[in-house]
Length: 208
Ligand SMILES: Nc1nc2c(ncn2[C@@H]2O[C@H](COP(=O)(O)OP(=O)(O)OP(=O)(O)O)[C@@H](O)[C@H]2O)c(=O)[nH]1
Ligand SMILES: [Mg+2]
Image (cartoon, rainbow, N blue to C red; front, side):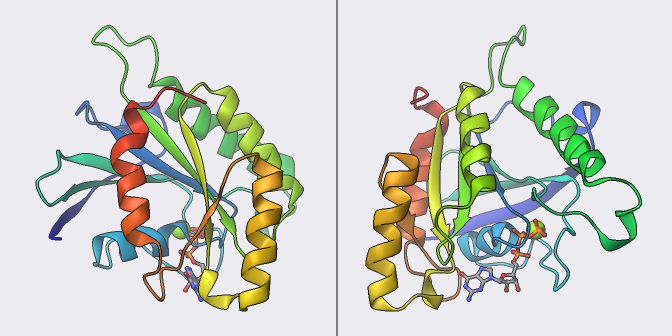
């Protein structure tokens, strides 16, 4: 299916968020989990910057996408959590966590209380398929679900798993998040169609 996609803006805070009131799906996850790579795989273009060095995406990047005849929407690449730049270690990790929290708080606040009505926002938490059970992923999940937005979890980099790991990790993720977790790969393309379907319905779903 044809996908049209363009970069719209990089936002450092609420004043920079786009004014178009389109449905949005935000990609959230630890630094290096594969958020930007996944957006590129979904739209089959290199629009999101992927770097060898983790922690590069420090802003909320908005991409306007249209798949086939579906209505236009935004995919949003949010900064990764759990990462402090080496040169910023003089600054505490807490400060990095706080600046991440400020941006994401401002981002999720837009879903609510706007005079023109709420913006439908869905959240996809990305977790690394190789590493089930990370405390930081569970904390992120608990925080995201507490925002009241509809949320889903997917596992990235499934191409790196053996068959036995795949079965075992899928089970571990399922018990961790109390729901099935689709494992997919930006490299092999496995699971991308399923993710598109999820993206289309998530923003208008009621929160779990
Ligand atoms: N094998 C494999 N590697 C992947 C996959 N997705 C991403 N990667 C690799 O993982 C690394 C991190 O990917 P990014 O897309 O930059 O991760 P990110 O979540 O955007 O990272 P930050 O912007 O730092 O938060 C890159 O080296 C990617 O090539 C995947 O599905 N399979
Ligand atoms: Mg990135």
